[in-house]
Amino acid sequence: MFALLGRALTFAAKAPRLWVLGVVMMLSSVGIVVPVVGTDEPPLFETAAALMSATGVAPGVAVAAVAAICVLVAVAFLAGEWATAVVVAASDAASRDGAPAPKASIAAVRRVWRRVVAVDALLILPVLGPVAALFAVPAVAADSRIADVALPALRFATSGLYAGWAVVLALFVWAWRDMAVRHAVLGGEGPLEAVRSAAADLTAHPVRIALMALVMWLLSSLASIVVVPVLAAIDALGGTGSLVVTPELAWRYAVPLAAVPLAPYALFDAAVWTYVYRALRLREQAAWEEHRRG
Image 1 (cartoon, rainbow, N blue to C red):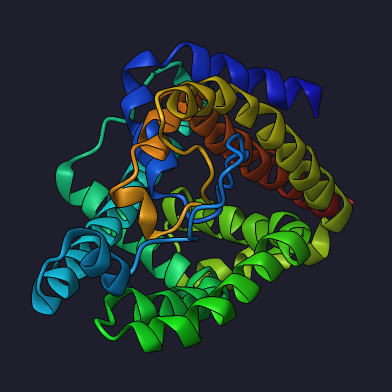
Image 2: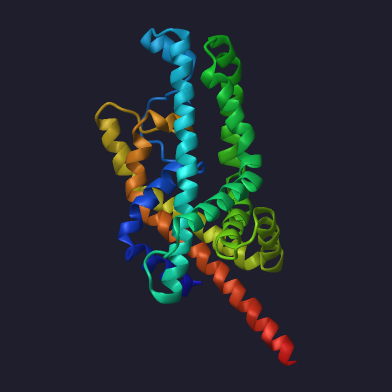
């Protein structure tokens, strides 16, 4: 395991021109929680009703502004999927022949990107989709009464999600997703086939994959420490450093700034799961060769 982590760290350190893709990956992540630095308790996210109250704009303008932000976040998510596909291929190329980036046509990258989006649609969206839908209702509602009803439900759902399901997501759903993405990108499998293959990996090597997922979860918590100075500086300037990554990030600048120092970690994380995937394939190949000889 330590050798694998070392290889992934070497890749992240020697691929600075890919760091911008790491920033994109961090910005598009739906699972990041940044530390709470400020003492104020800002709303979980802004809504059209709150925007109307704060700025005095017309209801249609407020709804359009919030809807535009939702679109911006969706675009960031799709950009992150493309960046993930490129970095996965790059880490695999670096492992095989030392190349810092994959040599692939735009058409090939587009096909791989579509597979990554489809894998997330099959695995991640069913888990986080209800929370996203619960966000959309009060966010774009011009009627504050709708937000007043939906906001407590959303706060309950997100607190449960991050406090109660965090370990499950880290040790199961995200590990499943990461392995499925490798099957799709590196194995050339279709989205549904990749999801099934990743499930087979989880059942065949549960301890190995769960242990790696736990290690990466702990390392991600340690990596988030670099965000604290950024948020502290924002607080010192009169801003707020307290937020959970939701579509609120589109108009609060704390998370985009925090994504920059976390970019190398994004490359490291992507490389780790690429090398886990390759290690399992090598073990399976060795087992098959031994079985054939026997």
